[in-house]
Image (cartoon, rainbow, N blue to C red; front, side, top):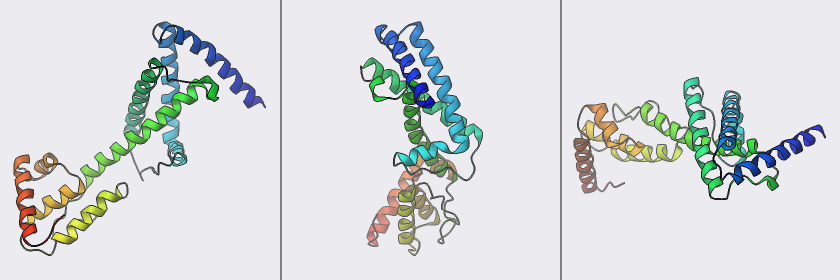
Amino acid sequence: MADEDDQGDRLAADRKLWSLVEADRFVGRSWSRLVDVMVAAAVAQMRRDLRTEQVFRHCVRRGWLLHAPDCWAHVDQDGMVQESVAKALEVFVRRCRAGAGWDPDRGSTLHDYFLGLCRGEFANVFRRWLTSRNREEVELPPDDAGPSVLRSEQDPARSALAKVILDKIKNTDVLSDLQRTLLFGHAYGLTHGQLAERFGISAKAVEGQIHRARRQLRKEGITW
């Protein structure tokens, strides 16, 4: 009962504050104070959620099957918190000024509403971080046996495609070792620029090698 009373008190206070910032068209001192308080509270809560992995439980409840990595640095976590809150703030401001912001009649406080936006943005930020990390850490195949470890847990679709490509090309002798490796890396999602940097050649040369390799494979009846 006390929790319900506290929720009601917070909602009542939020309604008063909302009427002020709405009347000021979401500019001015009251609006700035509101934003500062919401952002500070959201950053603190998101940090706690990441440390305890609570944020991933929120994601699962929304149908986003995201899981915490085995180990990741606090600096990565803090970076994701800051980016998530910043993007959520952009959404919040845009919605408010379009007349589609917080609705007090839905029963959520301003803090809970904004925190929900932050958690939603976190899912996108986290996916991008995983993709970036996977591309940086993917081990390109040193030989026909393929990579010793496919860092694939977070991107099963990419990994499945890469394995299919590797199976198709590993037993053909029409490709050079470089072409075979470039094809696999490209299938996994590495860009021409990333591959060029790894092998000390130009992005144009990578593109040419991949184009010639695929053309040669087509002559062998191998397509992808």
